[in-house]
Length: 69
Image (tube, rainbow, N blue to C red; front, side):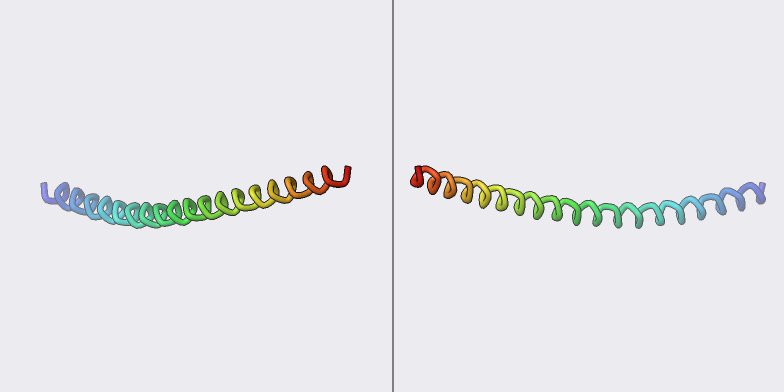
């Protein structure tokens, strides 16, 4: 009976160590996800800004073209 108990305790310790490792990895991945969300938000904002600037330039060029005709 004692060998089985020792084996169960050993397996439990291994399982607990694996669980701790997985918990740490999950925490790292959560940090990665947070950084990626920030990057997406920054890039989305930059794209909106560039699009607005491009549209503004296009309107100005259209006005110049209209005045030239």
